[in-house]
Length: 115
Length: 112
Image (cartoon, rainbow over the protein chains, first blue to last red):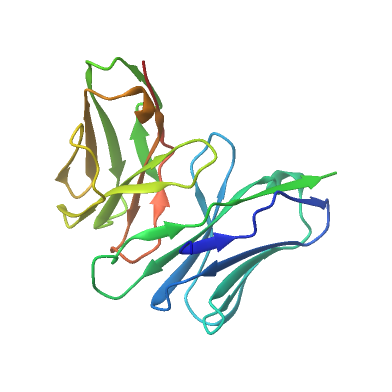
């Protein structure tokens, strides 16, 4: 089982719609969760970080975390063509041990927003 | 300011060359990272430096040699690379090892 899994995509939504991106993780001690956006040929750009159960909103983006079910999601409201990119879910462990400080990425979901 | 800078943007090298990638941040972050990213794959962690000391080496071949001269700078020395090492090399930094990581623009490396 992969440590971090994302819905495989690609995901295509019309402009103005809500895009829903999902991510599950296997390690129960994971404590920090991140969504990065990566345009083709560019580096990952932080969209959201979330650490506690519940929702966190930032503009058109909402991250949702459910530690009991081990999933984290990203909703993009009023999707725009400029949102078309690969979205990477990343998880890290805050406790000590050999994995401390290590970000584990999912494979990414390609989102296309068409006009 | 969450800027991490990397030089050069592009690098083409032969298998016998020695070159270095440079990364710099002025955010006072104490942890810095090197990642390698192949096309259509997520970034793969190579090295982690925390307080200028190497804390994680993900079993990276010795032809890649990291160096952290001070808390703002991170280098990756390259020697005798293989064509399969061609990739986007990303540097990142964070306040501490478990904190949000901010990525630089990357260096696109091509090994001939």
